[in-house]
Image 1 (spheres, rainbow, N blue to C red):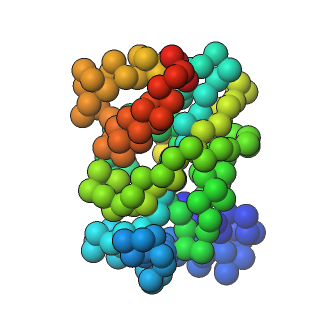
Image 2: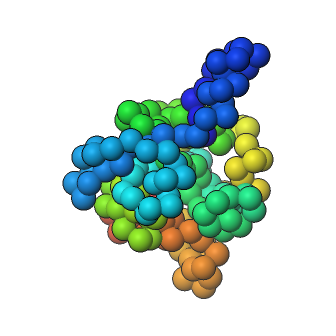
Image 3: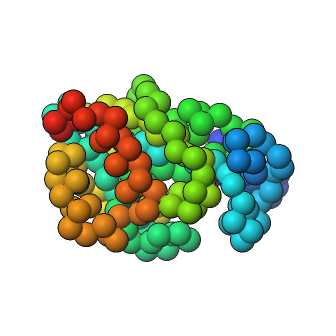
Length: 189
């Protein structure tokens, strides 16, 4: 998702920007920026880069998961975090999480960082920071990104993950396990 959307779409400059490919910070094994390359180049070469995931909860304790759109480049038609996405070049993790949460679900709310996963094959070589947020309000789901959403207790998600792990993205499986391990004192959150 590019950040050109706030520009006037009728200007020649904005059409050039909106057609331009996203740029990512390429990072070393310690998450230090070593280069800036296009999304396609980073993915083609399997380079380390950055991502965010957000677990959105209702006050009832249910967590939102979403079904990735069938047209997604990676892991189409599987369940994943409430919202997620790449960190753009020069962007902070939290800023990216706020942007992704709004772009995918139309939600503005306070985010709390609760975890971090090092780049690995399960995260598609992405250093990933996990944020949680609360929202009882209405969602504005981006249907180009998300095919369906479900609110479930974490116990039901844990059961589904145990029974059908391949129906969830590898990054979500890893993040959810880490989250639940660090929040073991909470029965459904």
